[in-house]
Length: 490
Image (cartoon, rainbow, N blue to C red; front, side):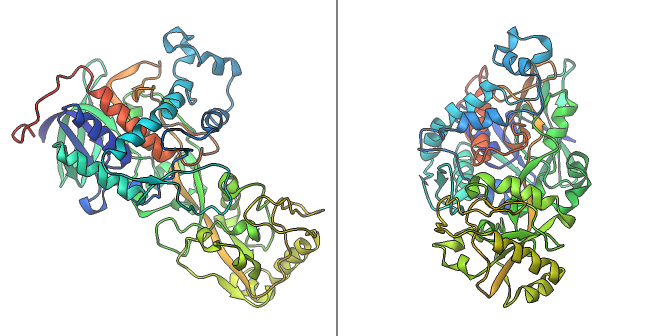
């Protein structure tokens, strides 16, 4: 066993951990970053994401930002307690100081911190723009870093390295070191078969539990066997940060029984092989039956609940069935990220055979759907209100007969983009205990922080990691004497 001393020890090398490390180092701190992955794979899921940001400009979040969080900020909870959470924490009733809900002050810190964080990243050379997304229809703007999450990871890591941050790859955080009063004094980790104590304030930024089958089954249920991470980086997220914080007395927060769902092609091994073309056809299960309204609204706002219904089908799989009309939609390929070709047949009977489902059932389903479609103007790039009549479940938009062969199908399963359950933090990214008091010298950012219930507030997870990572690093340096950096000190 060996010991290394730092001012701040960060577990995780995604955008949350790198933001914490960089902001602390900018204040003169001696900082260590522990990363389970090898250097060439550093960054976890951050490395693979396009990093959509729910912002209407580089300075402001979307108009519905706070409202969407508020609507999806808790489970079934006494409304009086929600009102109580608006009061300063020290003035609240004792039972309301560590509620498992999205605190208004935390949402506000995220919203207010977005613009300054983007400006901070631009100072490192990151560029942003409103680029084309995979959503052919959308309800909210999405700002993107040019180069995606990988550009964020590399810019932050380069700046951190220039400030003398010490990177420890293939080093897995395991357990918090505590003093006699329950305060954090450091972090135990394992590297190359050896245990190392990294002493200092700790920022937990090592992801959720998408890569931990046991935790997924424990919290999401036995059907989690049908899930897989959205990208290979998710396999590094094994939930230790959440577990060690809870073991140290942290208050839980977020919906532990849920996750952010995205529709992907199970045949593909590429990162995020999403299939967002289904609103222009029908979704059927293995029995050849429809089970949901495929187009209740814009695809960016409705794909998650639809993907959850796919997950609920037998074996967690469904098929998007389309005819040739979808290929005339402008830029339709943006909505198909899989590298696998569609399954194609000239007849529904032939398609059913390729999909290994009852031919009579699929043909009857399509015939019922076609009869229920009404005449009207098909406008694929906007909500056209072209709906079915007398069909259960209905289709609310883009309902046109599937009668132009050859027919295409894509298999779809639900991926687990990120888990919702985590620990509770305040507006300074300090981890709170079960009585609502900050655990001394412990911070969290990114997926370790629980902030979502039921429905994901789209394009906010990367922003949450960036903002609270930066806040954690800045707050951790409060009270620590700024050091003059030198090569020998590092």
